[in-house]
Amino acid sequence: MLVSLDSITITCNSEYFYPTGFVFHTEKDMVVVTYVREGVIIYKSPLEEPAILETKDFGRNNVAKDTTQYAFNTSEYENAHVFQCGFDLGECADSCEDSSPKPKGVKKLFAHAERQGILWLIDSSDGREGSLAIKHEVQIYSTFTRNGNHIIHELKPGRSAWLHVVKGKISHNDLVLQTGDGAGITEERSLSFTSKCSAEILLFDLCESKTEIKKLSKSKQQTAKVLSSIGSAREELAQVSKS
Image (cartoon, rainbow, N blue to C red; front, side, top):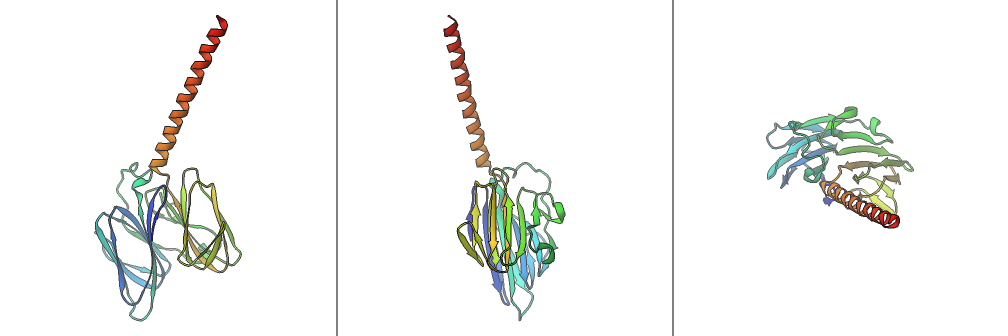
C-alpha cells in the first residue's frame, strides 16, 4: 500500500508468510521500519549483515535507492506476521539539516505490557524515551487497546499523521477502520480514535513538509508586502491631510 501525504510518502506492507519470505525493492532512499508481530524471521538489508527479528521486535534500517532487502521465515511449520513501512523522507523539512552519518540498522523488543492502553514511542528523531533513532522528525507509536478505549494524540502545526490498524477495529471520526485499514490526517491539531474491540494500532506522526514551509514563507512575505503598502498609503494620506 502506497500512501502520499503532504509531507511524506509511505510504503506499507503487512505480510503473512509460511514458510517462505518476501522481497522489498526500493526505488528511492528510504528509512525502513520492520515489525514482527508473530514468528521469527531472518532479515537482510543492503550492505548489512543478516539479522534475526523475533516476535515483538522492531527494526530500523536505512535503504539506498535501487536496492533490495529480503526477509525469510525461520520456521517450516508456523506462520510469521510482519509489518513493514518504508519512508521516503525527501520532502521532510529536516531531511538535509543533519549531516551526521546515518545510523546503522538496529532492533529492539517492545513488550506488549508497556504498549497497553497508551501510545508508546517506538521510533523518534533522537532515540528519546528508549525509542529507535530515525534521524528525522518522524515519530512512530504503538498501542494495544481494549474495547471502549479512547486515545487522543496532539499534532504540532504543519505535521500530518497516518493511523494504521494492525489488528482489530476502531472508529476514527466517521470512519470505521478494521485490520489492514489506514487513515491519513492532515491540517488537524489532534487525532483520536476509539476501539470497537481488542486492537493493535500503529500511529505515524510525520515531519513537516518543505513544500508547506515554502508556502508559509511565501504567504508571510506577501502579507508583509500588503502591510507595507497599507503603511505607505496611510503616511501619504496623513501628509495630504496636513497640507
